[in-house]
Length: 147
Image (tube, rainbow, N blue to C red):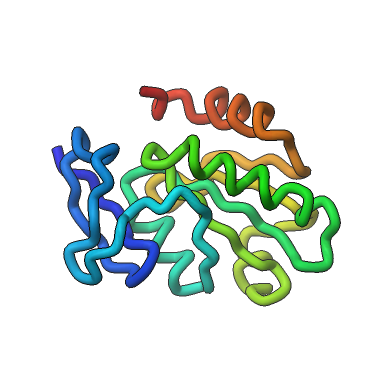
């Protein structure tokens, strides 16, 4: 069965056979890899498209440049992308640059990690985590995505 995956480069929705997600699929429009083992920084329009049109769960790191714990968490989140793709899409939203998104989702402390499934927020966790903690949190809170 095909899975909808939004390209992190051109933001076009692609249909990929579920069994082929791990085979480094490329975008039908821009021909770039659909998964690049790194979080995607997004603006409001890109964020909305990513959470609405990806069939896989989307994990979002809400952060800000001035936030010390956010800076410490950034490399951990990048490592998580290497381990969690293609089961998940990982995004980053700068809450200073995109206050509209932070306000809409009532982000009150950063970093905050939120998971979206089928366009709706499923769960969230405030505070920086170590890689093992983050991976465990994902596995515990989104058990249907384990392979």
